[in-house]
Amino acid sequence: MARISSLEKEGEEEEERLKVKVKVKVGLGWIEWARGWLNLIYEMLFQRITASHLQNPMPLPPINDITCVITGSTSGIGREIARQLAESGAHVVMAVRNPKAAHDLIQRWQDEGAGRGLPINIEVMELDLLSLDSVVRFSEAWNARSGPLHVLINNAGIFSIGEPQKFSKDGYEEHMQVNHLAPALLSVLLLPSLIRGSPSRIVNVNSIMHHLGFVDTEDMNVATGKRKYTSLVGYSSSKLAQVMFSSVLHKRLPAEAGINVVCVSPGIVHTNVARDLPKIVQAGYNLIPYFIFNAEEGSRSALFAATDPQVPEYCEMLKADDWPVCAFISHDCRPTNPSEEAHSVETSYRVWEKTLEMTGLPSDTVERLIEGEEVKCRYGAHEG
Ligand SMILES: NC(=O)c1ccc[n+]([C@@H]2O[C@H](COP(=O)([O-])OP(=O)(O)OC[C@H]3O[C@@H](n4cnc5c(N)ncnc54)[C@H](OP(=O)(O)O)[C@@H]3O)[C@@H](O)[C@H]2O)c1
Image 1: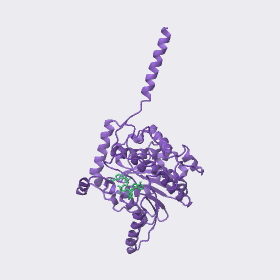
Image 2: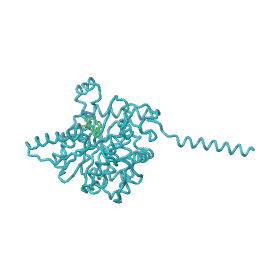
Image 3: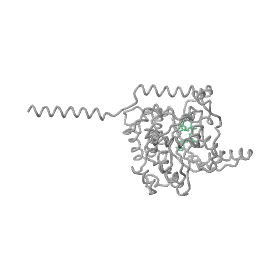
Image 4: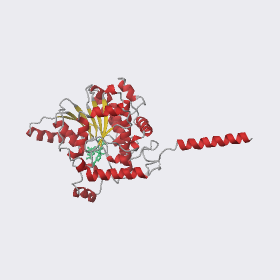
């Protein structure tokens, strides 16, 4: 009898130990939270000083023979990236949800460039990141050209400040879909073209605000009530999810594939990203121009990550060292460390698996694409 009760006791103790072991983190600790805010405030107050060594516009190396796809290139940082890459000789594809706006911009740039004797090689393709069908259609159309892609810049993003929570027609929280899920799907589906363009790069325009993010893979939509939704939670979590996914993608791409994945922070930049703010707050933005970058200044870290010849070497070094995170380039074009939370390898793998599941891709997608096999995605079957 005494033997049975001692076994029962041991069993209970083992159960308790296991519970402690599998105790999953449910949010950022207050120290991480405070550090996140400090990072954001520091970037805002001192970005002009820390980036004072950079020229504006930033001179780019010769890029005549590269093809770049840039999402969200009708406004803000993406518009500057597209213009500068095209004016420096690259073949630029503006991947946008409003093709008319893109064609109007091209016309303007062509008129301005003609005056300075600058021809530009630029085209427009439709892509709406709020629709995963649209992402698949874009990728299929691009891959069907059987040409190389040298640089994919996932720039498009939303921060619906103060807006109520919204969901895409695919059923996902809009920040998570536009800022993370759709760019992740696009990056994976374009791998065949990026392999043809190797050495090639995927550049994700991320944010210092990923430091405030926390990803719960059981609640990617922040809809179960475990966490209260705010636009800040939606935005920062989507940006952290992007860093985590990028870290695993970079690790899973064999060095021979010659594709590097980089996240960048553009700084705090005056663009249309604040379009949802009350007019009075937007006016405040204009009152403190000293601290806030203009779009040209904000485009420098992405342009650097896309074109600097030393970036691939740095990425390969991180891969060889089995570093837990992918390369992260700061607003001042210097490598920096992403948040402590982004270093969680276990959570990053959970984010990886969940992202593939949510975007309708098989778990061995990357390996199969590298082998040159075809991969079917759950999305993209319907005409839009
Ligand atoms: N501004 C900042 O301070 C700051 C700081 C850190 C990170 N960022 C990041 O920088 C990136 C660019 O933002 P921005 O500041 O330049 O803002 P922006 O001026 O609002 O530009 C965002 C771009 O994304 C496009 N976009 C939005 N939803 C889309 C969708 N469903 N499908 C396709 N395209 C879509 C927009 O298209 P339309 O032109 O059609 O609206 C626009 O071209 C974002 O990823 C943002 O998170 C910005």
